[in-house]
Image (cartoon, rainbow, N blue to C red):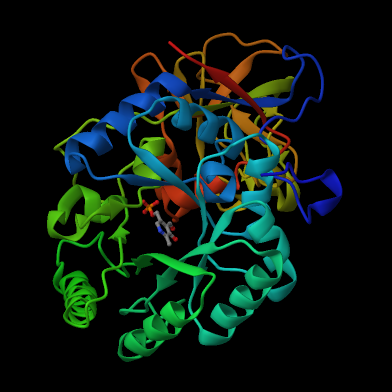
Amino acid sequence: MQKPTASSFVFLSAPVILMSSPKKTPSFAEINLSALKANLRQVRAQIGDCPIVAVVKANAYGHGAEAVSRFLSAQKMGIRMFGVAFFEEGLALRSAGIQDPILVLTGCAPDQMPDMIEHQLTPVVFDLETLQAINAVATKKGSAVKIHLKVDTGMGRLGIAPEKVRAFVQSARACPMIRLEGILTHFAEADLDDLSFAQKQLTTIKNILADLKNEGIAVPFCHLANSAAILHFKPAHLNWVRPGLMLYGYSPLKENNELKLNPIMQVKARIIALKKVSKGTAISYGRTFVTQRESRIATVAIGYADGYPLSLSNCGMMIARGVRVPVAGRVCMDMTMLDVTDAPPLAVGDFVTVIGAEGKISMWADHVARLAKTHPYEILCGIGPRVQRRYIQA
Ligand SMILES: Cc1ncc(COP(=O)(O)O)c(C=O)c1O
C-alpha cells in the first residue's frame, strides 16, 4: 500500500495546527486518550467479542482523526476497521500511516476508484453502476476489492431498496474482482425509548440475511448498531458494531444510568482583554446585552469560526476559575465576551473552560448543546481547526 502524496488530497483533516507556542495559543482542545480507552472498554462491555468499526469521520467528531485512529489501533481491543464518511478522509488516514482497514461510508465516485483501490480503502456501495465500475477498474489494476453493501431499511439516506439486494448480490458474485465483505444499514431512531421502528429495520436486514442464506450465500459481516443501538438494543449487535459518539464520551440516549462514559475533550480559550465597565454599557454586535451594574467583562479568543455557536449569544456559559460565567452579548466570529463580575480575580492570558470541567463545575458538550438547542454531535464536530488539539494520557 503506497502512501498518498499531498497532491492527491482535496482536503486534509488537520488534528494539530501549530499556530504559536502552546502558552500563547488563543484556544486549545485537550484530548484525553486514557478516557478514550476507558470508553472503548465500555463499548466492549456492551458487545462482548463483537468486532468494532470505530467511526472516526468528521475528524473523529472533532477530536482529530489521525491521533484518535492511531491510538485506537494500538489498543488491540477488537477494532476491525475505521469508518470515515469520505474518500479524502480515508486517504488522509493512509497518509498518516494508518494501515487498518478503512470503510468509506458514503462510497466512491468514478474518479476516486483507482486511488481507492491503490490505497485499499473499502467502499460502501449502493448501486449496480458503481459496483460494475469498481469491478472494471479493479480488473484493469489486477487487484480484488472488498466492498460493503448498504441497504436502506428506513433511514432514507443511502442504500439500495431491500427488494433489490438479491439481484445486487448476484451481480457482485458475478464480478470476478469484487469481494462482498459486509452488509450494513443505518438506524433512523435507535436513540428513542420506542424502538419499534428500529425493530422493523432490524427485521428487514435479518430477513435479507436469511434470504441470502437460503440461496447459499453467506455475507461474512453485517453491521448496523450505532452508539444508541449498542447501548439499548442488543439484538441489533449482530456480528459487527459501528460506534461513534460513545467513544468520545457521550450517550445519544436521554437516560443512560447504566454506564459511565467519559467525555474526552476539554476546550479552553484565552482571555485576551478584561475591562471594568459602568452600568448601562452595551456589549457586542447589535448591543443586545447592556450591563445592569458596574461589571467586569472578559473577551475570550473563541468564536463561531471555532465552533462556538452564534446561538449561544446571551445564553451560553463558560467556566472561569471554577465559576460558571454567562456569555454577554452576541458571539462574534473570533471572540466571545463573558460577564465575569461574579468570578474570582482573572487576568489577561488566563484560560477559561468552554467545554469541560473545573473541579465540580462542569460544562460538557451535551450541556453546551442543550443551551445552543442542538445535540452534542454538532458541538463536537464543529470545533474548528484554529483550536489546537493536544493529546494527553493519564
Ligand atoms: C453510517 C453511520 N454509522 C455509524 C455512525 C455512528 O453513530 P453514533 O455516533 O451515533 O454512534 C454514524 C454517525 O453518524 C453513521 O453515519
